[in-house]
Length: 282
Image (tube, rainbow, N blue to C red; front, side, top):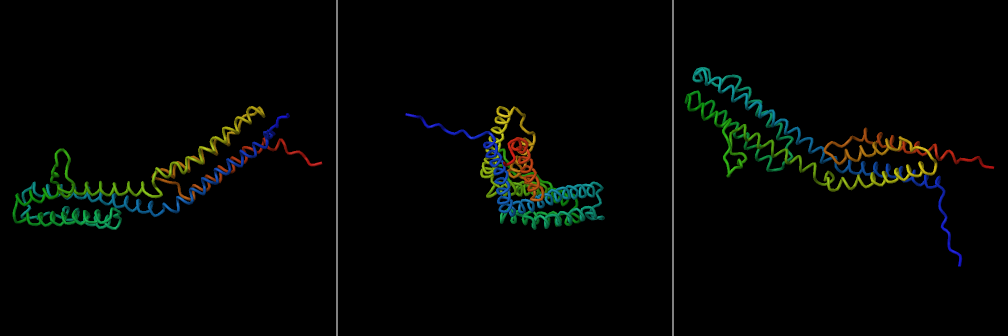
């Protein structure tokens, strides 16, 4: 009984298959990028707005510090009854109010974030009122105004209770709240790392296996070194995939040219070996 002999494909045929596979993985990565970039655009935009709100809150904290210093300077000379709180204090508190208004426009922490911003705005109004009252009350009034600006928070055991301190501490608590909202935005839905890493690492892993198989065949069958362009193609594809799994994905204007370059490099890397077997037709 004669055994069936399996026909082993010629190495050049295998190389053509491998080239098609590598180019296919680059195309899959490009398709995944377009889908994820489109679906995640709103989440990224929301996170950008939250980041803007955080910067305004940080600026408000700095201005609140200047207001505290201005009030301290006026009270130090003991003439607050004559000079009032001064223009430095008024300007600083006005900037705090302006930054809080801007932070409200970029708030993405929902009703919780909005209510806390309103609470901090109320604290600011109280600070200004107490500072103005200090003109009549003297040193005790100044102390109350400074406590409203820079009082320490209450503690539950060893942990500080948010929004129980003065204005500056509440601004810190508000910044932390908005940062948590930003983290949630960047780790939910189409920005969830648990979804993105397998989605982009899968095609990259297959591409890497195909490139390794290519290197083996080229080295053992053709006695040649694999083209460095293949390694560059893998790195270029990986840069897009890994960037999409982080908080700073590449823009379409950057990602697509990078992937197009990866495809071109992969195609050209196989061309010298395949060209060796292009015989003229008789």
